[in-house]
Image 1: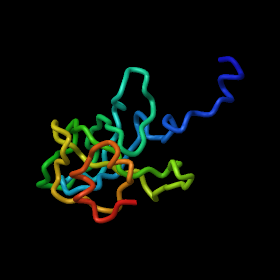
Image 2: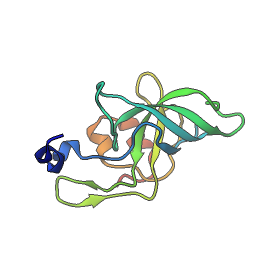
Image 3: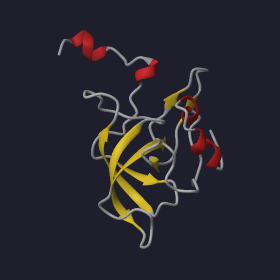
Length: 139
């Protein structure tokens, strides 16, 4: 790789939020899953990283008995919180204490009926209005 390419910082819309393959995330809904592992970041064959509002394919690693999803299920999920800080257009930064996601149905609506914890405002721009309305707080 050429040195000038390595030193270049990503553009604001391509800021690296370090959810990638093999990342483990907490599940912030009541589907019964506790933890998921990212299998793939959706959005193109070369896409490596995902941030708040991005959709991933994941597998359930830990689940409670009697939940909607079981351990080993492959699901789609949208990221709602990341530990890596994200720069907002007004110059402020937002970061959370954990990486978390909400499991989705095929039509893009959340599979659960409740959302736990705050979610990022970026979900509104990505048209996840159902998650915004269910969340107790939007930061």
